[in-house]
Length: 65
Image (cartoon, rainbow, N blue to C red):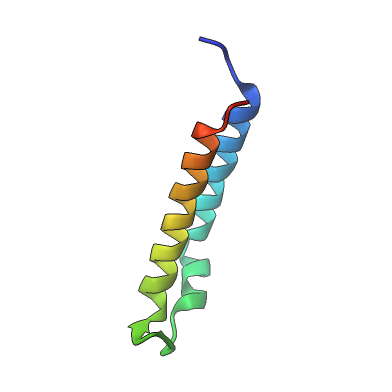
């Protein structure tokens, strides 16, 4: 199997971004009484970030470098 050092670096960067985005100080920014279409902002933001991270992971793994 051929090694892809750039892919490894990108995956580690994505992992680090996930750690930072789901860390308490940044999550506290979303903790408010605001709503999005009647849904509280914190769960909507967490689900959106989670979906974005999964989408980025899929894109990284499926691209043909």
